[in-house]
Image: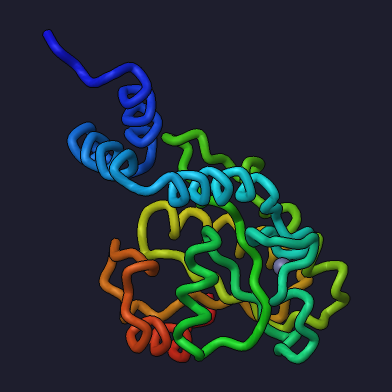
Length: 202
Ligand SMILES: [Zn+2]
């Protein structure tokens, strides 16, 4: 049975490892790439190589070009507010609402024992250390997680620890304007902005 040339199969195989890309789509993208100019392919490989230079901000653990991301390096933001999010995607989503001017902390996941995501795999310890080291400058932690099983478990865990350490004045969560189970990343800016404004203390 005929199949694609080996080098094309290898390309399709790599593409199929991307999230949300099924075998058919991988084939289509692979065939699309080889139709492109060499310049495009060279540039694509270069961009991929350069992505290895990305790092995580040492303060908030957001993905960054530098040791300190532009948000943490910005002294004009509200130091009393810290928004805790699951991943770099939510930082961008919250920023787009224009309703938040504090700093962020990226957990790099939510608690989900079924997926082996335990508190120690996340940046929770770093969050508590960060709050403690600021000596009361952080007045409120906003937990901007989805209203899902994982989001609820992570909120409960963090609020329990933070209250024990009594390092934080106030802990809040986004208002439930977002439909239960819906993803913050796909919420429109107005709905998410409103959920931030109407956040509830927990
Ligand atoms: Zn940062």
